[in-house]
Length: 307
Length: 240
Image (cartoon, rainbow over all chains, first blue to last red; front, side):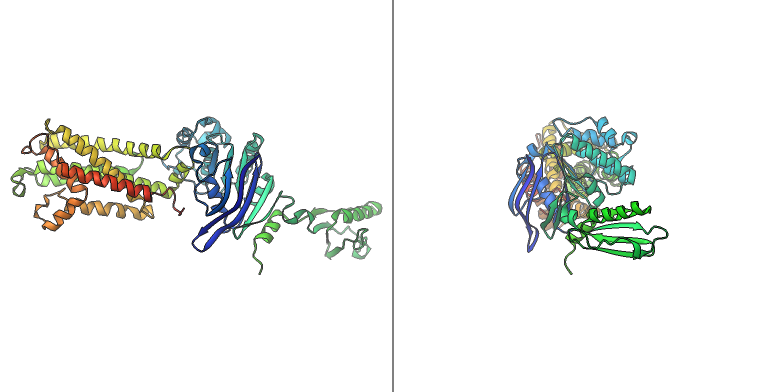
């Protein structure tokens, strides 16, 4: 079942087409991560899905509703964590949760929500006196107040320290295990990598790539790098030849001091040769790593306009 | 609301300061332009009108403008809370404060200036207050839509009604003004509000003391304010 589906979604502001034909399919129960640089049409798309803005054309379905006309029936089932946290500054954290949870038919308990985002100790602190990270956590709790089926999280961990970020990730992963659908936007690629089932990248108002975080943009088939340190007493010339593997995939070896880097599309073959050589010769390949382009590398490649 | 100092200033401090200082400096005077009625009988209803406008219009407009800028309106819009319930809550809370202010001004008027409510004109007084508050609340909602930045919004919101207060015969009788200015003031809903309240307190006006034309002007502004609000009210800072 699809939680969100858009076909040919467009939004024009005068001459500018901010969203230029976006097709999205978000499965119920998945964490869908929507990436894109500022000004790429990301926020406009999300706000159309949330019901804040009207589309110019195209089809949109959110939990089976058109968000432009879904009204209360739709809003009962979604939770929205906005990027700009708008909250009455004079309310305490607990009062804010008490206030907003009453807007829903089957709200979660305020105490339970505070516990979930680890704000129990700050329940009596006014919003204006909470730290940036604490306010974000309160925003997250507020988005979950109505026990929504679909949660929009817009840059949920901005301003978090690393420990708080891991905590938020756990909360989000917990929501996923409850069967909730999560539509996440973020600028942190490690966050997308850690949480997302699928990633879509928008640039210039269009989706330029969509796949799992490990496969997006051909990430699984890009050239990999094998790195290790030259074993003591081994001359670079006596390393095994890697440039003639059986399938013909070329490998390129570079030695820089004691650091050796091999670039190849088949790191498995290169490793086979290397480890066979090191085991047979009694050498140790210290600092051995295999790495492919990170999600961030791929993302930058996808979103940087050609020079 | 008591946690918000600006709101307290608009609703309570400002009108009370006017009531005490302006009133004290003209104590016991008689107003020849109004046929010799005591200044206090003119002045207490005038301040009452000003208080109600401050407590409703200025509060509604500023509170909505600030909450729009803070993103509170946007957040509320994303919940299942029906918009009319949100507005009913906001206006209801503000009307309660306005009611408290009315009681306070009437008490000060009674104790400090000996101006009491007349039983015969009480229904007219209540109708005047209800219609005046409703009309100014709705104008406040409409006005909030035109505040671009809440920080600069305070003058945009307050300037029109302070100017209007001075030309509408709230602090002193407007009979000395040129007739075109008096006529102009009559088109806006403050002059009719103040005059109709005044009639309820003026011992020379026979009960029940309704002023249908003034009430009609306020009702017309209620409709205009409602139409402007429906057309221009925005939940967030960006366009749709």
